[in-house]
Image 1: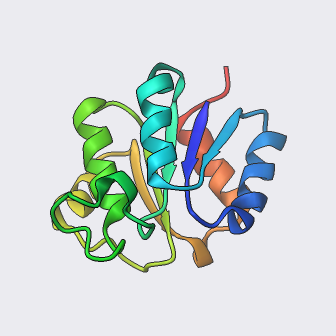
Image 2 (image 1 turned 90 degrees about the vertical axis):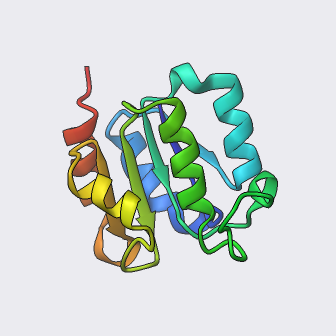
Image 3 (image 1 turned 45 degrees about the vertical axis):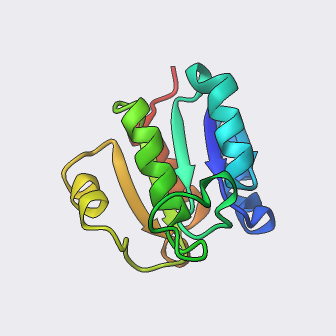
Length: 137
């Protein structure tokens, strides 16, 4: 199952639909609180995480460096990665770069971690990337 964490569900509809048409099971968490709860309850079912960077901080509000939600996705990424180093993760953001050297370097050096700017990836292209990371069985 693919978990998408993004606070703009309408914008993600086309990606979700394309993934479902390609026979992937997809769930959407619309905020960090929902995503954290989902990971607590169903972590073993998640095969791939697609994550936005900028979202309300929710339960992560006490975390260092959130800065009004500009780094919420990065903090969440690190939290998930620390608990599950092998989970494939795609960061899909409006930003044109990741404002975190550690995460940026990790993504450049690991084919199971990728970054795309939303404006530069069409739904079918995202599906192609997902297929590389998570082949259908």
